[in-house]
Length: 178
Image (tube, rainbow, N blue to C red):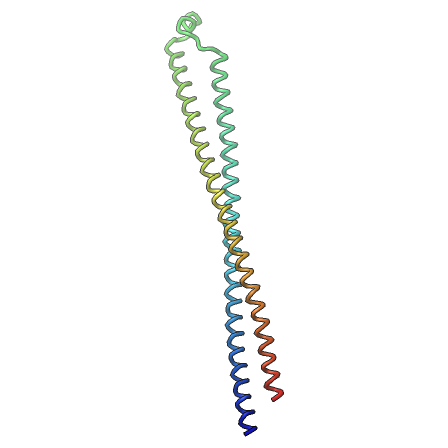
């Protein structure tokens, strides 16, 4: 009867050992999955941050282009108004074609309107670039938060792995002592 009890205890211990080993394998698999997800999240975060930096750079370049265009427009208008608009009588007295003066004035008006339209378009592009940059930064922050949660889950799995390794070692020692 004593040998039968020992055999039953040994069988239970072997079964406990097998269960602990299965749980340990499952935990190690979960840790591997968590590590893979962390790598993927880090890659996504890096890509998103690079996009945000690129969009910020584009917005800065557009802002500089706006300043350049505004400067050109202001110089154009300044030259036009400081040299004055010769009326038809002054142009004729000076020996200039009054029709050419009217054409020049019309051309300058169209040119200044085109420059103003370009500046407005560039401002719209800057706003869009900033919006996209902000969206990319928000996504990066979101990915960072997810990554932190994944790291916490991974840490919990590592603790679980240690506990199961300890349990497995205890069961193995119990089997040896029997």
